[in-house]
Image (cartoon, rainbow, N blue to C red; front, side, top):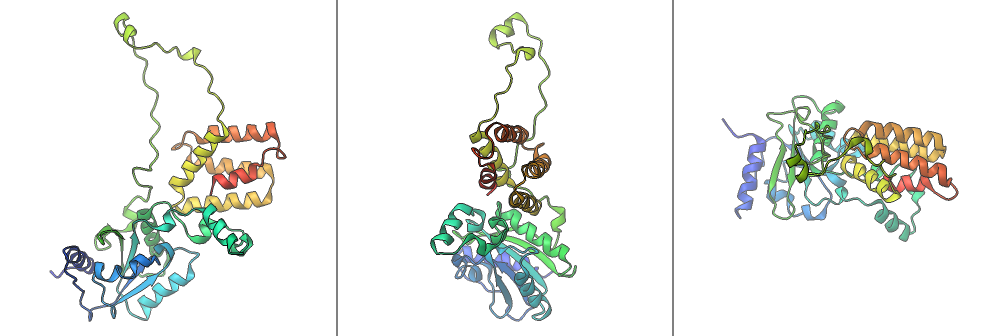
Length: 318
């Protein structure tokens, strides 16, 4: 059995890593590669994957992201499929991608120093406007998921997911479209960033005099009430949520809902939307509910004149 196109690319990459460039057959069926605009890929992508120039239709877009808002990338992929007759699609992410480290504050400073006003980007959240994401691998899978569900790509066309190491040139297969669908995989933050599950309280332990001497006795009914969260703790809890979930399309929609409420500037609506959003994630992030209660308390006690809570929420969710 002849090797699949993906296997040929993996073999070409192994050859590249061994110091020998190996290009795929230039006369076989074309295929589409969606990669990032990062300049480090300009001289790395082709040799690392063995891409023949007159066969590989390479589409470059910021963060190699394919989504509903990016019509131009969709048009380029469709051109590759239906005009160039490409038979397979490869979404190729890369390590150390700037779009996964996006800082709204730095970008705002950059365009303002160039004399460009914030209004030039509309009312949309800047992370959404630029297509920023939190996790490189999840971004690849979400782009594949969008393509597969968009109706743009026929089921006969295989879609693969790869990540290219910009330091070594090594290719990692995230999704083998020959044997699996993106819907077979769970798209979630990396394990290192995933929230720990909430553990149920331990059953009470009967203590003998011997064990009591070794362990302090905690009397539940005498527990000191929890201290209200500080503004710093609220900020940390919200930013943890954003850092871990911002790569998900659902969370991006949540941010758009919140942005619309913030533009409305009605406290009741803002808190209602915030409550709805945090309720969706509080089972995985136990600090969210206390954070919301602390935020409500600050608004009530200080008043909007002293506490600019709208700006605080905007900053926390950047």
